[in-house]
Length: 120
Image 1: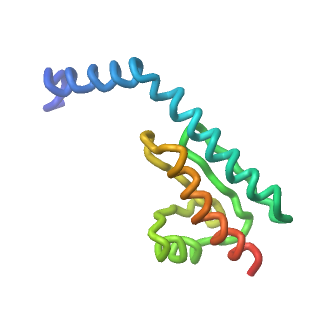
Image 2: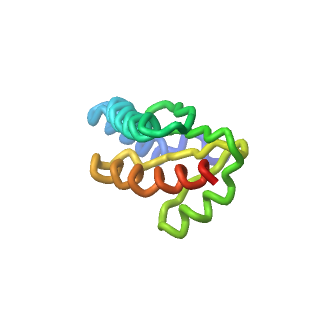
């Protein structure tokens, strides 16, 4: 290809891989993802709502088992970007640099929206 073996691109890729290894970014994603999953699980356990929470690292899906496209607009009004996949699954992809306080903000903002949506 035209860009195959580009020395600059190879150098950048090598540096990215070094940073990922040196800063243990995969482990950080796993830790933060587990925290976020646990926060949502604790909220749903306090209700009679059944939501399937699944994910890998910071890529998390909340299966509401109910169409939730209108929930995207409600979240946007709260300045929260969410994505709906397969009609009933909210996909969350927070950034790798997210801090614990920001995880709490996600749950505190999104959980009431989900709760109201599932109760309606």
